[in-house]
Image (cartoon, rainbow, N blue to C red; front, side, top):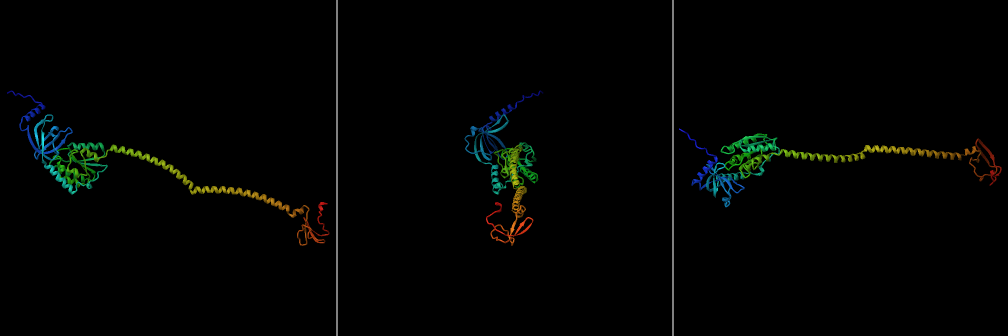
Length: 410
């Protein structure tokens, strides 16, 4: 028997065939689907992308700009809706999805209700209070991470930490981040790292996903574990628009896992640049202070030298020496002057000394009482007088007195 093999189809041909089958099915070409919205994204192009889910499954949906521009309510994760449209396949990816032509609001989803109820309960108990938030360390030596070991989140966190602050050590506690066992594992990981004394800060979270995929971080046990931690915790769950209970309880919420790594680590290169700039500025200021203080010190030294009692004493000693020299000069001059004056006085006295006159042939006349006679007044005839000569005394008697006549004139 000859086995005839059919011609193989290309992938695109298979997708095109399935698309034609979907289009030919009357039920798939026009249906209404009820479910809860999750993982909603409103693209900048105007198109809406989301999933419809119930407790047993979910389906991808797209609603183009022309179909969604007349919607009169706010579409967001957690609300229940009824979508009218058709099922077709996106040939490029091979995914089938519901192309929504119309959408009606149909209440709030169970997960979203549970989220809001738990949020109100924990907020009332004070688990979200800012006063309970712990401050993150500026230089974390060791960073703990509680997340999946296989997801993109852990890779992004490690990459950012190694780029920004490569000196930090990283301790990873791998856990499930979705599913029934995920909350318990997350709690164990957080407690394990918190009990270590060398962990400075902990990051917990995961990449983006639908509300049900992120719901492990909406678990009450996880929230209370984070609140009871002694180590600061940064929550990094999903994308920037995703919020979970863990975000509200944590000491800090990061919009993404990469952002969490940036938040907990300083940028080493920038720190070194700032340090070098501050070091240069400090050196410049020190040099200025040294120069300025050197001038002040020189001025103070001169002032101290001027007011130093030792220097003043030396100056006084020198001044005293100068005064002593001047005194000696003055005394010598005074002595010389006095000697000259004394000599003159001596000469004068010597000249007036009667003894000197006697040596020149003169005599001194004394009366009987030995009073010197210098005039004839009081002298009478026959008075006895004494003539004092240089070598003796002559007693004489007055014979005659001639008034007005002088012997030396004759």
